[in-house]
Every structure is written in C-alpha cells, then in structure tokens.
Image (cartoon, rainbow, N blue to C red; front, side, top):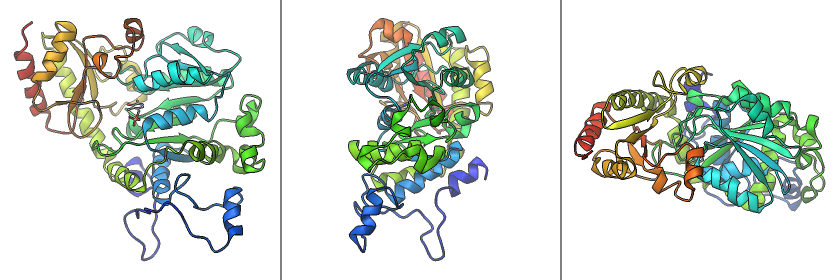
Length: 426
Ligand SMILES: *Cc1c(COP(=O)(O)O)cnc(C)c1O
C-alpha cells in the first residue's frame, strides 16, 4: 500500500459484521475463563490483553498504523511525546551509560537528557547536527548506547543528516533514534536512511487538531542487538521480572525492543494513552497526508513572503533556496518538509513579542503543527530555562518567532502578518 492508503486503511481490518471504524475498547481489564490462561499472559507465553496499562486493542490498532506508515516492524503508543522520547532512550540506557545527541532538539527532550536523565546517572554529549564526521565520532565513549536527533528540529528547524548520524552510530555498534515529529512519515521515513528507531509526539501533525497529547515509539526491527549483546543486556540476557525471558530470543529482532518497552517500561511507569485518545489520534491520521501537503504549501508561501520583508531580519525554512539546510532538506524531504517556519523580527526580543501580539488570525500558543496557525516566542517560553549559551547551541536566538502554518488560506495568513508588521515601530 502507498502512504495515502496506509493513512486510511492500515492497522485495522474488520471481519464480517464488525465495526467499520476502530472500536473504542474503553475497558481497563479483560475477562478470562481460567487463572491458568491469564498466568500464561503474565509469563509472556501467550499473546493477549489483560490490563490496559500494558496493552489495549484500540491503541494497538493505531500503533500498527503508525508502524506501517514508518515502515517499521512494531510500535507502541504513549500518553505523550515526552513519554515516548524517555521510553525509547531508557529501554536501552541505564545508570552509567552515555547518549550522543544532536544539540538542536526539542526543549523538553534537551531537558530530559541534560537534567533528568543525568540525575539517573545517564550522561549526554550534545553535538552540532552540522558537525563534521570527525567531530561526531569524537563524541562517542565506550559506554555510549545510543545516538539521537530530530529529522527537522523543533524549533531550530535544522535538518538532520540521517545517513551521517546512522553511519556514525552503527560504526560504534549503537542504534540511531530519530524524532520524526515535524516531518511525519508522509515527508520522511528515517528507516529508509538507516535510522533504527523512530519516536513521535503524535500531539502535533499526527493528531493535527490540537485535541490529544500522545506519543509513539516505532522499531525498524533492523538493529542487531545480539551482535552487540554486551552493550544491551536488557534485551539479550534473562529478565528476572518475567521468569528469565530473553527478549531477543523469544521475540526476535523485529519484536524484542517494543516488547521490552511495553511489558517492562509501560508496566512500571504506566504512561498509557486512553483508548479514546487513541481513537481521536486515528481520526487525525486518516487525513495526515492531505493536511501535510497544505501545511507545506502555506509554509512555503509565507517563508517566501517574509524573506522579502524589510522588517524581517532572517527566515529559517529548509524549503527556501539558499537556506543552510535547503540541499539536505531536498535530499531527505523532496516533497515538502513541514509547516513550521522561524524568523527574526527587526528590533530583537521586544519586537518579536510585540509582533506576535498584533497577529489576529495566528494565536499565541505553546503548540505547533495543528490545523490552526499559531506562534510562539521560545526564548521566553519553552526554552526559558536555558542559558544564553545553551540557547545559541540549541539554535534558538532571542528574536526567534516560531510560526506554525495551519491549513487556512495562505492569503489570509499573509494579510495577518502584513498588518502586524505594519504596526511595528522599528
Ligand atoms: C512536542 C514535541 C515533543 C514532546 O511531545 P509532547 O506530546 O508534548 O509530550 C517531542 N519532540 C518534538 C520534536 C516535539 O515537537
């Protein structure tokens, strides 16, 4: 099936007389005829549902759709994107381990690694995504377990050279995790370029209507954990909490990573999406391919408009010829990147805030990537915990406005920006 068909059809295939739309199985638990049957589920000897903290049929159907869109072997939904990012890393890192990450990543993910996971004894080295191969290789240590980056970084909008990062990761015997939230599988499928695991904040384009928080972790099934068994004992040696099951032996390379994520991390941390939220996410996925096209068209028009405006000092959008990431954007996303652009307003921090207040169609929100146009000043909101040096390293300057183009008519959005800029005293 092509991507467009997968958006509609993948993940759920009803039998004769069954509901056409994915049923919302709004139940915490599932009934069994005997305790023995349920015991087999607890020992991972049989496949089935017993408690929705671990697995739920509605959520599983939607996870299967996302796995199909990314071209992966298995996926799991989480209650937020942050839970997906944390689980994806923590599934293969523990105390004493080390992460190599692109420095231009989502503020929440940056904080997770640099503060919270550090407190758990997991170290991180941030590298500029545009660094040389030598600089990238120099970031690895003997205890490095994973490499991390974002296809299109939020909010820096740098484009990750997935092949460069995947090759470096693999030459050190570790997998590459890519956060594909902004590009979505419609515009980029990181597995095709060597990434091993993909994470999503489904709260963004996948839901697309700013209705439900959610996340997803998808496994390509390609990383050979057994070839680096000493690095990943959690996958390749017995799990005492399941009577000694070895995930790679029991579930194979295509199922080991997601099974461990589900039966260990979901069991113990419980960041489970509600079945109703999974249903709403699926409604979003059904139009993802149609919406992405319009988001990208609008962003292209607005980026071109802004790049010619005298009150705009710079525009960052990889669809603009001349952008530092234009060529790499064309390589990985020839059909369009995303609807988010960033730019600087003449006059710096204060002018940026003043400009945003004058917008009437676009609203000020801590959100991006939904049907309605919105904007944000990261330096005073999502990234306010960062020092000035960290802000620069993360690709976020004080004058940066992040503008997320919705799927309204582009002329209305441009007229809105025009009147806001006209009102600015510069
Ligand atoms: C929003 C976002 C996250 C976090 O997702 P939540 O659903 O808000 O928890 C992670 N990565 C990227 C790229 C994001 O844009």
